[in-house]
Image (cartoon, one colour):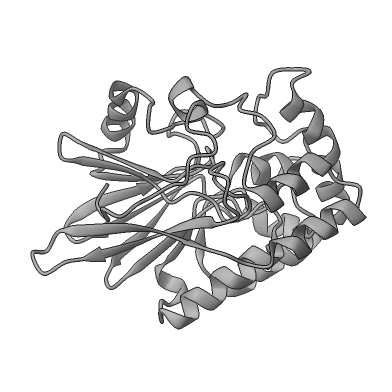
Length: 279
């Protein structure tokens, strides 16, 4: 496993994950970054650039040319190794498992050698200093790239990650839901993903902004945006990708909650609200 050390960051940091081959969402994310005047050197992707949607090659090339920091998600690891599945360890025969047998080989067939070579350059983790804090970027968890860490995941499991990485802040991805868990002077922050909505019955997708405040500590804010999701959904249908995921783009509801703990499952369809920016 490789860790890229990125030195010390200053200024605003933009974090997002799970592009999932959703080129339309990525284009909107790039526009927002430009409007906020956040340079590529201060932008972080938590992995899974490739996924369910219809434009994996266009999406990878755009991220690559953008020049931002990105770590390898489980999908990138599987693709660069030429594996036959996405590496999410879905229960065999589950709906997610069945769907992955469609979108994963589709992605393999569309990606250029150049894109696969780029995936080989991606580190497993990223570390950097910010406002005197050590930050560490993981995809799922430090111990398992495809491991699911949610807000409801017991703190002890998160604490083991902080101990192993010797970090103060962990920026995670993979689970598809934005959240923050702040305890014992540590922060586990998940920006959410931009490639699929957050199961809250809205078509919004999510990212995060970190900023050092006047006291020299770190504020974080979850933000959402709308984009041309109907185009992304139409392209999925035209390319015979799972209709259920195209439906999710249009409704904001996941087809199933197979990967979710009970607390996140019962929250399906409830609109996310991050009014308290340090939540």
